[in-house]
Image (cartoon, rainbow, N blue to C red; front, side, top):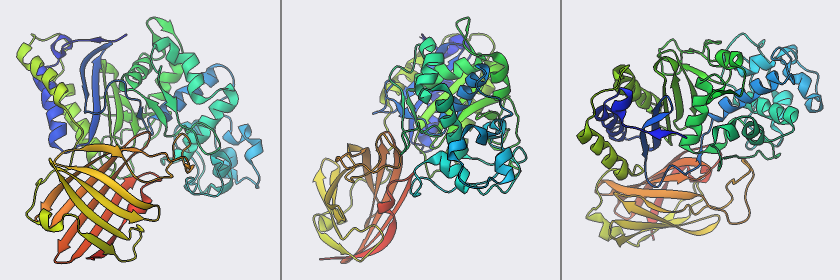
Amino acid sequence: MFKTVTPESVGISSALVEKMIRTLNRRGLAMHSVLMMRGEDIFAEYYWKPFDKDFCHRMYSQTKSFVGVAIGLLEEDGKLKLSDPISRYFPEKLDREMPENLKDLTVRDMLMMETCGNTPSWFRHEDPDRVHLYFAENTARFPGGMRWEYDSPGSQVLSTLVEKLSGMSLFDFLNARIFEKLGTFKTASVLKTKTNDSFGDSAMLCTTRDIASFARFVMNYGTWHGERLMNEAFLRTATSRLADNDEMGFDGVFTHGYGYQIWRTAYNGFAFNGMGCQLTVCLPEKDLIFTCTADNQGYAEAKSLILTAFYDLIVENIADEPLEEDPEAYARCLALAESLELLHLSGETDSPYADTLNGKVYVCEENPTGITRFSLHFTGENSGELHYTNAQGDKVLPFGLGKNVFSKFPEYGYSDLHAGARTTDGFLYDCAASAAWRESQKLCIKVQIIDKYFGNLFMMFSFKEDRAVIRMTKTAEDFLDEYTGTFNAVQR
Protein backbone atom coordinates (compact mmCIF):
# COMPACT_ATOMS: atom_id res chain seq x y z
CA MET A 1 0.00 0.00 0.00
CA PHE A 2 2.60 2.55 1.10
CA LYS A 3 5.97 2.87 -0.55
CA THR A 4 9.14 3.46 1.46
CA VAL A 5 11.38 6.13 -0.05
CA THR A 6 14.43 8.17 0.92
CA PRO A 7 13.80 11.45 2.74
CA GLU A 8 15.55 13.35 -0.05
CA SER A 9 13.06 12.10 -2.62
CA VAL A 10 10.26 13.95 -0.79
CA GLY A 11 12.23 17.09 0.00
CA ILE A 12 13.79 16.46 3.40
CA SER A 13 17.35 15.74 4.45
CA SER A 14 18.22 12.31 5.83
CA ALA A 15 20.61 14.07 8.17
CA LEU A 16 17.70 15.99 9.71
CA VAL A 17 15.65 12.82 10.09
CA GLU A 18 18.58 11.23 11.91
CA LYS A 19 18.98 14.34 14.06
CA MET A 20 15.31 14.28 15.03
CA ILE A 21 15.38 10.65 16.17
CA ARG A 22 18.60 11.20 18.10
CA THR A 23 17.06 14.30 19.68
CA LEU A 24 14.12 12.25 20.98
CA ASN A 25 16.54 9.76 22.50
CA ARG A 26 18.69 12.48 24.00
CA ARG A 27 15.65 14.02 25.70
CA GLY A 28 15.04 10.79 27.61
CA LEU A 29 11.71 10.07 25.95
CA ALA A 30 10.22 6.58 26.09
CA MET A 31 9.48 6.31 22.37
CA HIS A 32 7.97 3.21 20.79
CA SER A 33 7.63 4.23 17.13
CA VAL A 34 7.89 7.15 14.71
CA LEU A 35 6.56 7.21 11.16
CA MET A 36 6.60 10.14 8.74
CA MET A 37 5.11 10.23 5.28
CA ARG A 38 4.59 12.69 2.46
CA GLY A 39 1.74 11.85 0.18
CA GLU A 40 1.57 8.08 0.42
CA ASP A 41 5.34 7.64 0.66
CA ILE A 42 6.93 6.71 3.99
CA PHE A 43 10.28 8.47 4.32
CA ALA A 44 11.00 7.63 7.96
CA GLU A 45 9.92 4.63 10.03
CA TYR A 46 11.48 3.74 13.36
CA TYR A 47 10.64 1.25 16.12
CA TRP A 48 12.27 0.98 19.52
CA LYS A 49 12.71 -2.73 20.30
CA PRO A 50 10.77 -4.75 21.39
CA PHE A 51 8.16 -2.77 19.41
CA ASP A 52 7.89 -3.38 15.67
CA LYS A 53 5.64 -2.57 12.73
CA ASP A 54 3.25 -5.43 13.58
CA PHE A 55 2.65 -4.44 17.20
CA CYS A 56 -0.94 -3.34 17.91
CA HIS A 57 -0.36 -0.40 20.20
CA ARG A 58 -2.90 1.16 22.56
CA MET A 59 -3.76 4.53 21.01
CA TYR A 60 -5.55 5.94 24.05
CA SER A 61 -7.45 9.16 23.21
CA GLN A 62 -6.56 9.05 19.54
CA THR A 63 -9.55 6.66 19.63
CA LYS A 64 -11.80 9.71 20.05
CA SER A 65 -10.95 10.88 16.54
CA PHE A 66 -12.16 7.55 15.16
CA VAL A 67 -15.42 8.09 17.05
CA GLY A 68 -15.77 11.57 15.57
CA VAL A 69 -15.45 10.17 12.05
CA ALA A 70 -17.96 7.40 12.84
CA ILE A 71 -20.50 10.03 13.96
CA GLY A 72 -20.00 11.75 10.61
CA LEU A 73 -20.80 8.51 8.79
CA LEU A 74 -24.04 8.16 10.76
CA GLU A 75 -25.00 11.73 9.91
CA GLU A 76 -24.32 10.96 6.26
CA ASP A 77 -26.58 7.90 6.56
CA GLY A 78 -29.38 10.05 7.97
CA LYS A 79 -29.35 8.22 11.32
CA LEU A 80 -28.74 11.34 13.38
CA LYS A 81 -28.53 15.11 13.22
CA LEU A 82 -25.72 16.98 14.91
CA SER A 83 -28.28 19.48 16.20
CA ASP A 84 -30.19 16.75 18.04
CA PRO A 85 -30.01 16.61 21.85
CA ILE A 86 -27.81 13.68 22.80
CA SER A 87 -30.32 12.59 25.49
CA ARG A 88 -32.93 11.89 22.79
CA TYR A 89 -30.99 8.78 21.77
CA PHE A 90 -30.79 7.26 25.26
CA PRO A 91 -34.26 7.42 26.87
CA GLU A 92 -33.59 4.10 28.59
CA LYS A 93 -30.62 5.65 30.43
CA LEU A 94 -32.56 8.56 31.93
CA ASP A 95 -33.91 7.99 35.43
CA ARG A 96 -33.88 11.49 36.91
CA GLU A 97 -35.43 14.83 36.07
CA MET A 98 -33.00 16.08 33.44
CA PRO A 99 -31.30 19.42 34.14
CA GLU A 100 -32.03 21.88 31.33
CA ASN A 101 -28.36 22.20 30.36
CA LEU A 102 -28.07 18.43 29.97
CA LYS A 103 -31.44 18.14 28.24
CA ASP A 104 -30.35 20.70 25.62
CA LEU A 105 -26.82 19.31 25.07
CA THR A 106 -26.44 18.43 21.37
CA VAL A 107 -24.41 15.87 19.46
CA ARG A 108 -22.43 18.77 17.97
CA ASP A 109 -21.65 20.13 21.44
CA MET A 110 -20.38 16.68 22.39
CA LEU A 111 -18.18 16.44 19.30
CA MET A 112 -16.63 19.82 20.08
CA MET A 113 -16.19 19.07 23.80
CA GLU A 114 -18.27 22.10 24.62
CA THR A 115 -20.35 20.11 27.07
CA CYS A 116 -22.19 21.14 30.21
CA GLY A 117 -20.42 19.59 33.20
CA ASN A 118 -18.34 16.83 34.73
CA THR A 119 -19.01 13.20 35.63
CA PRO A 120 -17.17 11.02 38.16
CA SER A 121 -14.44 8.59 37.20
CA TRP A 122 -16.02 5.35 36.07
CA PHE A 123 -13.22 2.91 36.81
CA ARG A 124 -14.18 2.31 40.45
CA HIS A 125 -17.71 3.70 40.40
CA GLU A 126 -20.48 1.34 41.51
CA ASP A 127 -22.41 2.12 38.29
CA PRO A 128 -20.73 0.07 35.52
CA ASP A 129 -22.78 1.69 32.73
CA ARG A 130 -20.82 4.71 31.53
CA VAL A 131 -23.70 6.22 29.53
CA HIS A 132 -26.13 5.91 32.44
CA LEU A 133 -23.47 7.41 34.71
CA TYR A 134 -23.05 10.37 32.34
CA PHE A 135 -26.72 11.28 32.47
CA ALA A 136 -27.22 10.40 36.14
CA GLU A 137 -24.21 12.18 37.62
CA ASN A 138 -23.37 15.02 35.22
CA THR A 139 -23.15 18.28 37.16
CA ALA A 140 -24.73 20.11 34.18
CA ARG A 141 -23.51 23.48 35.47
CA PHE A 142 -23.08 25.15 32.09
CA PRO A 143 -25.08 25.47 28.88
CA GLY A 144 -23.67 23.31 26.09
CA GLY A 145 -21.78 24.99 23.26
CA MET A 146 -20.37 27.81 25.39
CA ARG A 147 -17.03 26.66 26.81
CA TRP A 148 -14.50 24.02 25.93
CA GLU A 149 -13.45 21.48 28.54
CA TYR A 150 -11.90 18.11 27.85
CA ASP A 151 -14.67 15.57 28.34
CA SER A 152 -13.53 11.99 27.89
CA PRO A 153 -16.77 10.45 29.26
CA GLY A 154 -18.65 12.47 26.63
CA SER A 155 -16.62 10.78 23.92
CA GLN A 156 -17.63 7.42 25.37
CA VAL A 157 -21.30 8.43 25.08
CA LEU A 158 -20.69 9.24 21.40
CA SER A 159 -19.02 5.87 20.87
CA THR A 160 -21.98 4.06 22.42
CA LEU A 161 -24.27 6.12 20.20
CA VAL A 162 -22.37 4.84 17.15
CA GLU A 163 -22.93 1.27 18.29
CA LYS A 164 -26.60 1.81 19.09
CA LEU A 165 -27.47 3.43 15.76
CA SER A 166 -25.28 1.25 13.55
CA GLY A 167 -26.10 -2.04 15.25
CA MET A 168 -22.39 -2.88 15.10
CA SER A 169 -19.37 -2.50 17.33
CA LEU A 170 -17.36 0.69 16.81
CA PHE A 171 -14.57 -1.28 15.17
CA ASP A 172 -16.83 -3.36 12.92
CA PHE A 173 -18.68 -0.25 11.76
CA LEU A 174 -15.49 1.58 10.84
CA ASN A 175 -14.00 -1.57 9.36
CA ALA A 176 -16.95 -2.09 7.01
CA ARG A 177 -17.06 1.53 5.93
CA ILE A 178 -13.40 2.56 5.86
CA PHE A 179 -10.71 0.18 7.11
CA GLU A 180 -11.39 -2.62 4.62
CA LYS A 181 -11.02 -0.10 1.79
CA LEU A 182 -7.73 1.13 3.22
CA GLY A 183 -6.38 -2.41 3.40
CA THR A 184 -5.18 -1.79 6.95
CA PHE A 185 -6.41 -2.48 10.53
CA LYS A 186 -6.38 -6.23 9.80
CA THR A 187 -5.10 -7.07 13.28
CA ALA A 188 -6.63 -4.10 15.12
CA SER A 189 -9.28 -4.18 17.85
CA VAL A 190 -10.95 -2.03 20.50
CA LEU A 191 -11.09 -2.96 24.18
CA LYS A 192 -14.45 -3.07 25.95
CA THR A 193 -15.97 -1.42 29.01
CA LYS A 194 -17.42 -3.40 31.91
CA THR A 195 -20.82 -3.44 30.13
CA ASN A 196 -19.29 -4.72 26.86
CA ASP A 197 -19.58 -1.42 24.99
CA SER A 198 -16.47 -0.49 23.05
CA PHE A 199 -14.09 1.59 25.18
CA GLY A 200 -14.48 4.36 22.63
CA ASP A 201 -12.66 7.20 24.30
CA SER A 202 -9.39 5.36 24.86
CA ALA A 203 -8.91 1.84 23.56
CA MET A 204 -8.20 1.40 19.85
CA LEU A 205 -5.33 -1.06 19.45
CA CYS A 206 -3.67 -0.84 16.04
CA THR A 207 -0.30 -0.56 14.34
CA THR A 208 1.53 2.65 13.56
CA ARG A 209 0.94 2.09 9.86
CA ASP A 210 -2.77 1.54 10.54
CA ILE A 211 -3.22 4.94 12.13
CA ALA A 212 -1.07 6.58 9.45
CA SER A 213 -3.44 5.20 6.83
CA PHE A 214 -6.44 6.58 8.74
CA ALA A 215 -4.71 9.96 8.94
CA ARG A 216 -4.13 9.86 5.18
CA PHE A 217 -7.82 9.10 4.63
CA VAL A 218 -8.89 12.03 6.82
CA MET A 219 -6.38 14.35 5.16
CA ASN A 220 -7.81 13.25 1.80
CA TYR A 221 -11.16 14.43 3.22
CA GLY A 222 -12.84 11.10 2.65
CA THR A 223 -11.31 9.64 -0.49
CA TRP A 224 -8.97 6.68 -0.96
CA HIS A 225 -7.30 5.99 -4.28
CA GLY A 226 -9.95 8.00 -6.08
CA GLU A 227 -12.94 6.37 -4.35
CA ARG A 228 -15.07 8.52 -2.07
CA LEU A 229 -15.79 6.72 1.20
CA MET A 230 -17.22 9.65 3.15
CA ASN A 231 -18.54 13.11 2.42
CA GLU A 232 -15.92 15.82 2.20
CA ALA A 233 -17.87 18.54 3.98
CA PHE A 234 -18.02 16.73 7.32
CA LEU A 235 -14.28 15.99 7.42
CA ARG A 236 -13.35 19.53 6.43
CA THR A 237 -15.52 20.80 9.25
CA ALA A 238 -14.28 18.14 11.70
CA THR A 239 -10.65 19.11 11.15
CA SER A 240 -11.26 22.87 11.32
CA ARG A 241 -11.05 25.23 14.30
CA LEU A 242 -14.55 25.17 15.77
CA ALA A 243 -13.83 25.72 19.45
CA ASP A 244 -11.20 27.75 21.24
CA ASN A 245 -9.35 25.45 23.66
CA ASP A 246 -6.69 27.81 25.02
CA GLU A 247 -7.20 27.54 28.77
CA MET A 248 -4.10 29.36 30.04
CA GLY A 249 -3.23 31.99 27.43
CA PHE A 250 -0.08 30.22 26.25
CA ASP A 251 0.72 29.18 22.68
CA GLY A 252 1.16 25.47 23.36
CA VAL A 253 1.26 22.57 20.95
CA PHE A 254 -2.43 21.80 21.49
CA THR A 255 -3.97 25.24 22.08
CA HIS A 256 -4.76 26.00 18.44
CA GLY A 257 -8.40 25.02 18.64
CA TYR A 258 -10.59 21.94 18.46
CA GLY A 259 -12.88 20.42 15.83
CA TYR A 260 -15.00 17.29 16.04
CA GLN A 261 -12.91 15.09 18.38
CA ILE A 262 -9.85 16.34 16.48
CA TRP A 263 -7.26 18.88 17.64
CA ARG A 264 -5.89 21.81 15.68
CA THR A 265 -2.12 22.37 15.53
CA ALA A 266 0.49 24.83 14.37
CA TYR A 267 1.12 25.15 10.62
CA ASN A 268 -2.64 25.05 9.95
CA GLY A 269 -2.74 21.36 10.76
CA PHE A 270 -4.86 18.98 12.76
CA ALA A 271 -4.06 16.07 15.05
CA PHE A 272 -5.22 13.00 16.91
CA ASN A 273 -3.88 13.16 20.46
CA GLY A 274 -3.60 10.34 23.01
CA MET A 275 -2.25 9.96 26.53
CA GLY A 276 1.41 9.03 26.86
CA CYS A 277 2.28 10.65 23.49
CA GLN A 278 0.20 8.71 21.02
CA LEU A 279 0.32 11.49 18.42
CA THR A 280 -0.67 11.90 14.79
CA VAL A 281 -0.20 15.27 13.12
CA CYS A 282 -1.51 16.07 9.64
CA LEU A 283 -0.29 19.16 7.77
CA PRO A 284 -2.36 19.42 4.57
CA GLU A 285 -0.41 22.38 3.18
CA LYS A 286 2.79 20.31 3.35
CA ASP A 287 1.07 17.01 2.44
CA LEU A 288 2.90 15.70 5.51
CA ILE A 289 1.90 13.22 8.22
CA PHE A 290 3.75 12.47 11.45
CA THR A 291 2.69 9.73 13.84
CA CYS A 292 4.32 8.22 16.89
CA THR A 293 3.60 5.88 19.78
CA ALA A 294 5.24 6.09 23.19
CA ASP A 295 4.60 5.95 26.90
CA ASN A 296 5.66 9.19 28.49
CA GLN A 297 2.94 9.32 31.14
CA GLY A 298 4.18 11.54 33.93
CA TYR A 299 6.60 13.47 31.70
CA ALA A 300 4.69 16.73 31.32
CA GLU A 301 6.92 18.23 28.65
CA ALA A 302 7.06 15.13 26.45
CA LYS A 303 4.46 16.05 23.82
CA SER A 304 5.97 19.49 23.40
CA LEU A 305 9.48 18.04 23.06
CA ILE A 306 8.38 15.54 20.40
CA LEU A 307 6.38 17.97 18.32
CA THR A 308 8.93 20.79 18.64
CA ALA A 309 11.59 18.44 17.26
CA PHE A 310 9.27 17.52 14.38
CA TYR A 311 8.34 21.13 13.61
CA ASP A 312 11.83 22.60 13.95
CA LEU A 313 13.78 19.89 12.13
CA ILE A 314 11.32 18.50 9.58
CA VAL A 315 8.50 20.96 8.92
CA GLU A 316 10.67 24.07 8.86
CA ASN A 317 13.14 22.48 6.46
CA ILE A 318 11.00 20.48 4.05
CA ALA A 319 11.31 21.53 0.43
CA ASP A 320 8.74 21.54 -2.36
CA GLU A 321 11.08 19.61 -4.64
CA PRO A 322 13.27 16.51 -4.16
CA LEU A 323 16.77 17.07 -2.81
CA GLU A 324 20.01 15.56 -4.02
CA GLU A 325 20.35 12.06 -2.53
CA ASP A 326 22.73 11.64 0.41
CA PRO A 327 23.63 7.93 0.57
CA GLU A 328 25.88 8.28 3.62
CA ALA A 329 23.28 10.09 5.71
CA TYR A 330 20.56 7.68 4.59
CA ALA A 331 22.76 4.72 5.54
CA ARG A 332 23.12 6.24 9.02
CA CYS A 333 19.33 6.47 9.25
CA LEU A 334 18.99 2.80 8.38
CA ALA A 335 21.64 1.81 10.91
CA LEU A 336 19.97 3.95 13.56
CA ALA A 337 16.65 2.22 12.93
CA GLU A 338 18.26 -1.16 13.64
CA SER A 339 19.86 0.01 16.87
CA LEU A 340 16.91 1.60 18.70
CA GLU A 341 15.82 0.04 21.99
CA LEU A 342 13.22 0.96 24.61
CA LEU A 343 14.40 3.57 27.09
CA HIS A 344 16.04 2.19 30.22
CA LEU A 345 17.02 3.85 33.47
CA SER A 346 20.28 5.78 33.36
CA GLY A 347 22.96 5.73 36.08
CA GLU A 348 25.73 3.51 37.41
CA THR A 349 25.39 -0.23 36.87
CA ASP A 350 27.36 -1.18 39.98
CA SER A 351 28.05 0.04 43.50
CA PRO A 352 30.38 -1.15 46.28
CA TYR A 353 27.28 -1.43 48.43
CA ALA A 354 25.71 -4.11 46.22
CA ASP A 355 27.66 -6.93 47.89
CA THR A 356 26.66 -5.74 51.36
CA LEU A 357 23.02 -5.56 50.33
CA ASN A 358 22.79 -8.71 48.23
CA GLY A 359 20.14 -11.10 49.56
CA LYS A 360 19.53 -9.22 52.83
CA VAL A 361 15.88 -9.24 53.93
CA TYR A 362 14.21 -6.00 55.01
CA VAL A 363 10.99 -5.91 57.02
CA CYS A 364 8.70 -2.99 56.17
CA GLU A 365 6.55 -0.89 58.44
CA GLU A 366 2.84 -0.87 57.66
CA ASN A 367 2.45 1.13 54.46
CA PRO A 368 0.04 1.90 51.59
CA THR A 369 1.60 -0.65 49.23
CA GLY A 370 0.99 -3.58 51.54
CA ILE A 371 4.58 -4.76 50.99
CA THR A 372 5.73 -6.42 54.20
CA ARG A 373 9.29 -7.46 53.27
CA PHE A 374 11.74 -7.31 50.40
CA SER A 375 15.25 -8.26 49.37
CA LEU A 376 17.47 -7.40 46.41
CA HIS A 377 19.48 -10.09 44.63
CA PHE A 378 22.23 -9.25 42.15
CA THR A 379 22.56 -12.22 39.83
CA GLY A 380 25.49 -11.16 37.61
CA GLU A 381 25.74 -9.91 34.02
CA ASN A 382 24.17 -6.60 35.09
CA SER A 383 20.97 -8.31 36.18
CA GLY A 384 19.09 -8.63 39.43
CA GLU A 385 15.79 -9.48 41.08
CA LEU A 386 13.55 -7.71 43.55
CA HIS A 387 11.91 -10.24 45.86
CA TYR A 388 9.00 -8.95 47.91
CA THR A 389 5.85 -10.02 49.70
CA ASN A 390 2.52 -8.23 49.50
CA ALA A 391 -1.16 -9.13 49.95
CA GLN A 392 -0.98 -11.56 47.01
CA GLY A 393 2.02 -13.42 48.40
CA ASP A 394 5.66 -13.75 47.41
CA LYS A 395 6.73 -11.95 44.21
CA VAL A 396 9.86 -11.76 42.05
CA LEU A 397 10.56 -8.91 39.64
CA PRO A 398 13.64 -9.36 37.39
CA PHE A 399 15.48 -6.20 36.33
CA GLY A 400 18.54 -5.18 34.37
CA LEU A 401 21.24 -2.75 35.45
CA GLY A 402 21.76 -0.31 32.61
CA LYS A 403 19.42 -2.36 30.42
CA ASN A 404 15.85 -3.63 30.29
CA VAL A 405 14.87 -7.14 31.30
CA PHE A 406 11.51 -8.25 29.89
CA SER A 407 9.10 -10.38 31.92
CA LYS A 408 5.59 -10.44 33.34
CA PHE A 409 4.80 -7.90 36.03
CA PRO A 410 3.94 -10.04 39.07
CA GLU A 411 0.62 -8.52 40.11
CA TYR A 412 -2.64 -10.33 39.41
CA GLY A 413 -6.11 -8.95 38.86
CA TYR A 414 -5.49 -6.13 36.41
CA SER A 415 -7.87 -5.53 33.49
CA ASP A 416 -7.53 -7.38 30.21
CA LEU A 417 -10.12 -7.16 27.40
CA HIS A 418 -12.62 -5.30 29.58
CA ALA A 419 -11.25 -2.12 31.14
CA GLY A 420 -12.06 -1.68 34.81
CA ALA A 421 -12.96 -5.35 35.22
CA ARG A 422 -10.60 -7.30 37.47
CA THR A 423 -9.26 -10.55 36.04
CA THR A 424 -9.26 -13.79 38.01
CA ASP A 425 -7.52 -16.13 35.55
CA GLY A 426 -3.89 -15.37 36.39
CA PHE A 427 -3.48 -12.75 33.65
CA LEU A 428 -0.29 -10.64 33.95
CA TYR A 429 0.97 -7.62 32.00
CA ASP A 430 4.17 -7.68 29.96
CA CYS A 431 6.78 -5.32 31.37
CA ALA A 432 10.33 -4.05 31.03
CA ALA A 433 12.36 -3.34 34.17
CA SER A 434 15.69 -1.52 34.45
CA ALA A 435 17.69 -0.28 37.42
CA ALA A 436 20.61 2.02 38.18
CA TRP A 437 22.58 3.21 41.16
CA ARG A 438 21.89 6.94 41.50
CA GLU A 439 24.11 7.17 44.57
CA SER A 440 26.36 4.55 46.13
CA GLN A 441 23.58 3.49 48.53
CA LYS A 442 20.54 4.45 46.45
CA LEU A 443 19.14 2.01 43.88
CA CYS A 444 16.31 2.99 41.52
CA ILE A 445 14.16 0.58 39.53
CA LYS A 446 11.92 1.66 36.64
CA VAL A 447 9.14 -0.63 35.43
CA GLN A 448 7.42 0.01 32.12
CA ILE A 449 4.16 -1.86 31.50
CA ILE A 450 4.04 -2.58 27.75
CA ASP A 451 0.81 -4.41 27.10
CA LYS A 452 -2.76 -3.51 26.09
CA TYR A 453 -2.38 -1.06 28.97
CA PHE A 454 0.67 1.14 29.49
CA GLY A 455 2.07 2.53 32.72
CA ASN A 456 5.23 3.41 34.61
CA LEU A 457 6.39 2.54 38.10
CA PHE A 458 9.45 4.17 39.68
CA MET A 459 10.93 2.70 42.87
CA MET A 460 13.74 4.27 44.88
CA PHE A 461 15.51 2.24 47.58
CA SER A 462 17.77 4.28 49.89
CA PHE A 463 19.96 2.48 52.44
CA LYS A 464 21.84 3.54 55.58
CA GLU A 465 23.30 0.98 57.95
CA ASP A 466 20.43 -1.47 58.66
CA ARG A 467 17.67 0.88 57.59
CA ALA A 468 15.96 1.58 54.27
CA VAL A 469 13.53 4.15 52.92
CA ILE A 470 11.46 3.13 49.92
CA ARG A 471 9.53 5.51 47.69
CA MET A 472 7.21 4.18 44.96
CA THR A 473 5.36 6.35 42.44
CA LYS A 474 3.28 5.35 39.45
CA THR A 475 1.73 6.89 36.35
CA ALA A 476 -0.92 4.51 35.06
CA GLU A 477 -4.65 4.63 34.55
CA ASP A 478 -6.54 2.34 36.95
CA PHE A 479 -3.68 0.05 37.93
CA LEU A 480 -0.39 0.01 39.89
CA ASP A 481 -2.27 1.72 42.73
CA GLU A 482 -0.82 -0.90 45.09
CA TYR A 483 2.64 0.44 44.29
CA THR A 484 2.37 4.00 45.58
CA GLY A 485 3.78 5.23 48.87
CA THR A 486 6.87 6.09 50.92
CA PHE A 487 7.83 3.96 53.92
CA ASN A 488 10.62 2.66 56.18
CA ALA A 489 12.13 -0.79 56.43
CA VAL A 490 14.66 -2.42 58.75
CA GLN A 491 17.07 -5.26 57.95
CA ARG A 492 15.97 -8.41 59.67
